[in-house]
Image (cartoon, rainbow, N blue to C red; front, side, top):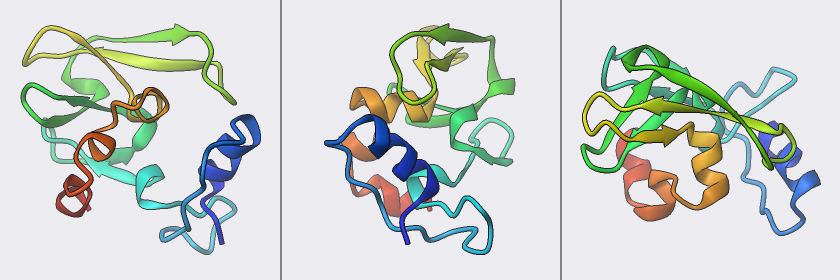
Length: 119
């Protein structure tokens, strides 16, 4: 069974290869590790991938509570929007993990070995 979010993305992007679901298997939206929960390095709470941000300078995953968050509208199928966080560590704006994956800057795309560490 594929991840619910991967299948959504694949309907908008034929080149996208869905991952197998590993989490929340009994729900209407089973998910892969990429679309599951990430623990914030700021507050230590797990949260949805759309509300997590990665700072490449500090290699920290941050939640929406770590700094000012802003919605951005643009081409990002199938949603058409994403979030950015003004990073408390470096001062730059980082996209939410879902948009980072779309743009090729998700930390697991940059360093595939990091996936095992974050799970």
